[in-house]
Image (cartoon, rainbow, N blue to C red; front, side, top):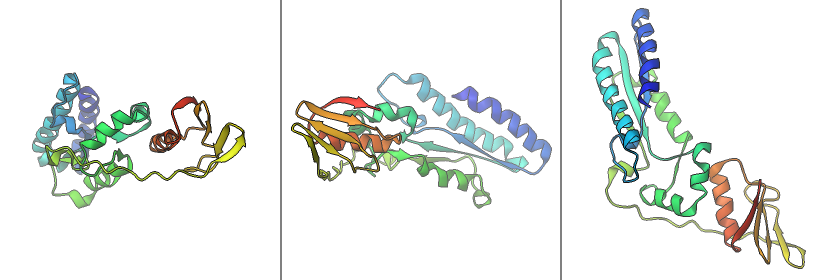
Length: 212
């Protein structure tokens, strides 16, 4: 994490200094740069802390060249890389329980902050680590989980022991229910929708099969 930040930034800033027109550097950090986690991630946490320190140090060193250096520091963000983790209801519940806004972040939550910090609107901002974490770093108290309201859609009886739902969250079909358990089909590509569909399917019974 540190090397992939350090090397390209050094080359880019060298070009900015030679160009003589200033510039913007935006590092990608994590809330783990400020918070430890009791899960054996010492190397990752140390790397994020190093990125935060480099952000402040570079802001100090390169200010004379008109170069602003800042970082965004998100918490857990819903991406394809973590889709399987979020498919686990207990894991997802644990993540959300620590976030006051009671949801997992999305990539769209990072866009506005990133654009702001590389635009002229942030010309007097440098050396800052902007948390994008739904309030995670604002409190030590676990958030109160707001349970979603689940409305079971109507099921169409296909055979004596098979019921199918053909209209749910944009999937057609999305899952079928049998007397032997729920069969999930056509899993959505978007991780948040896949998790939501699985949770809704589970209201009809245990999931026995998943067909992508």
